[in-house]
Image (cartoon, rainbow, N blue to C red):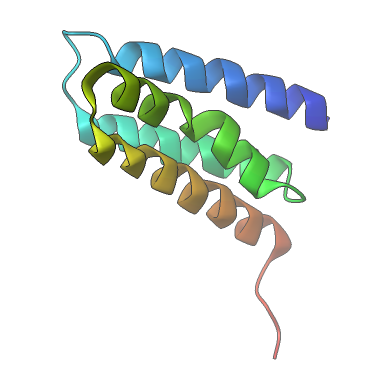
Length: 98
């Protein structure tokens, strides 16, 4: 299951980076939401490694943005991926009891 989730995260991350780098695409909010939700699903399905899903999914856009356009603001995509993956993990594990 872990290998399948990693493959899905890498493929979807690459596709999202491709769409985000398209000259016709200019909707950062939608992309951030898609990254958050996708990472959340991955974190829910594989709560043991949310950091891995976040990196595999969210690293593509900043990598492309920094290399192509020196756009360091694209690191927000990685932040959204981590937030989504850990939110998905938290939903799977349930509330923490005191």
